[in-house]
Image 1 (cartoon, rainbow, N blue to C red):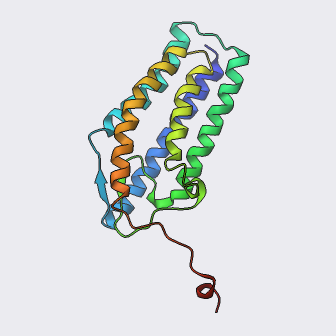
Image 2 (tube, rainbow, N blue to C red):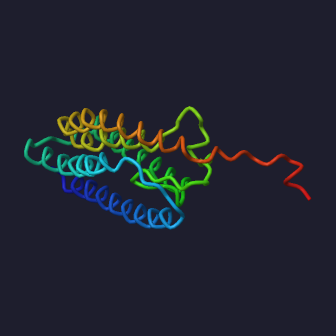
Image 3 (spheres, helix red, strand yellow):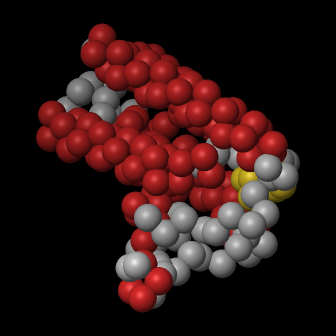
Length: 185
């Protein structure tokens, strides 16, 4: 296994820790405003799957002596970077409403900026998760890890999306822009 691949996986791990820091801060903010937490039963499974992804990347690349194949590795690295960019676009667009857990603050409207302005893509962060879960292992040909993550992520995402959609149905309606007459003096 290439040392730079171990560094890449470690950097993704650091990114996950940054997510948890932001999520905890946002959870505190949400709960102080009456936030309601949904779907706690599936959350530990998500944490385990994402931790397993990082461990699997390193273990498979090292123990199975998976090579770096440039024709596969470079495009997969580009997808990993794109997934991170999409993920943090989601985080910054949702602001205090973003979390790794499903928390809805009563009265707050659904966010309609950033990638959430596209009505056809309701959960862009999960696109980032799916792309990263397949691409990160494939940077170093760890196809078993990519396959295992993808297969385990599908049923977990079904549960998560049902939970999140039900929670979001309790949120305030999307905020509409004010008519022009209300925005000018």
